[in-house]
View 1 (tube, rainbow, N blue to C red):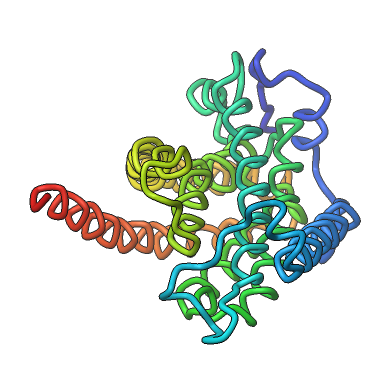
View 2: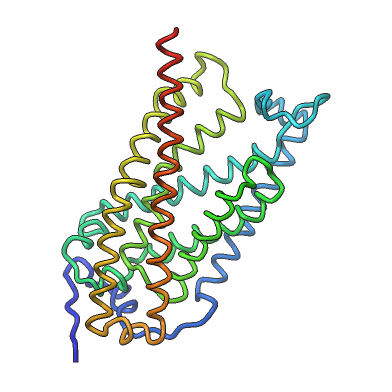
Length: 304
């Protein structure tokens, strides 16, 4: 019989629970949490939508009008859909980002566990916050997919496919308790750049006035941090962690641990592996777009 040694930094009740053989089903135990998240997100969206549409409230809160490129009404320019969507996205990404950063870089956290633990633990053990990150992310991906159907700027093949694939990964983590520490990275740390992207998108749709505090924050803080965090987490570390996950999967399959710990669910590992490369290529595609945007900004500064 193959035994598994639990590293000291993963020796918690949560880790032991995940490492034991797990029953599985099509619906995760956290389904009520996921559904609650969707309801809260959409409630927040509808409230913000109403606030934007109400002239007196919008004027009192100094909510800006959209940029001319995104006006949908020549008589009364307004985009409550974009405004509400960006606010909900900001709240979600900052929640996931902060939870993930604390979990990844904490002493004896996910990052250190990735370096010293066994393949079985990296795939199957769970930090207490892993399920929370996966549940919030799944709530957002499902809600985003639904709402984006009515927002032309977001209803693109690439973005809708991305939401669908991300939801599959979240579902795999929650139903099969698979990915372990890897989930903190793929579902959490990969969203750190989105914390800054959502601010850039908001300024794109609702341009702040020149020399305002919002303009300075977007121009000199959010922009550079987005580029740096995207390159580091979504390109460099993405491929490094994906390669480690591939090696870990081969290990647990060879030792038989995949079937012992998750009977009949080894196919989930194959599914996740099949998604890692396309998602990694998508990150590289987005990187080329970011490079073009950065080049455009630098060109404007040179001309000025």
